[in-house]
Image (cartoon, rainbow, N blue to C red; front, top):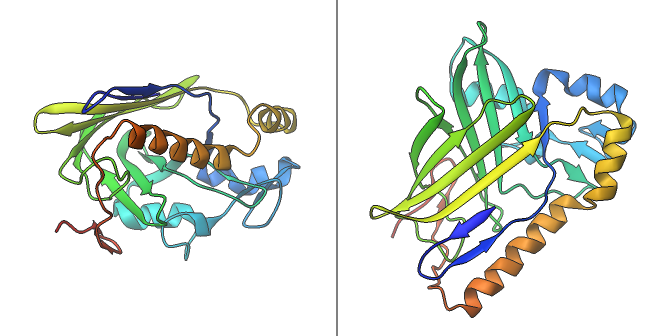
Length: 234
C-alpha cells in the first residue's frame, strides 16, 4: 500500500508475494523445492549477483556490511528471480545475534536506473530513522528522511516507511504479509496466483509514474550516483 498526500493525493493497494528466507537454509531449499534453485536457472531462482556487489554469498555480504561479529542469523525478505527476471525496489534483512536478539536491520534499496544502495539501520527498534541517500522516484526529491518500522517475522510480517520532508509526511508505504510454508505445492500456487511477480512490480511502478505525471506532480531529474555513497546532492 502506498499513500501520497502531497502535492496531490495518489493512493493504491496491490496484492503481492514476497519470499522470507533464512539465508542458512538456501542449500536446503535448492534440494527440496523442484521449481526453486540457488545461483542457477529455474522457474524461481535466488542469485547472489542480485544483491550487494554480487561477488560474495548474500549472507557474507550482509555480515561484512554490518560488521558485528556477534551476528549469526540473517532473514531476507525479497523478490527472487522468476523466469530469470528480477526487480527488487527494496530487500530487507533481519540480523540476529547468537542469543536470538535483533542486532540491526539492513535495507537494500534499488531504483529503476540500476543503482543499488544497502544501508544499515541501527537502534533499539522496532522503528529506525535514516536520511535518504538514493534517488528512487523522479517525483520525490533527495532532501528527505525515511522513518522505518518493522515487525519481526512470525505468522505475519510487516514493514512501514514514512517519508518525512520539512516536518511533513508526504508519503507512506506499507508491506504486510501472511506466512505460508515453502513447499512444492505452495510454490506452484504462488506462481499461479502471482505470475511473473518481479515484472508486474516494475510495470506497476511505471503505471503509477504515468498517473503522477498526469497529475502534474513536480519532476526531479536523476542526480549523479557514486557506488557505496548513493545519489549525490547538487
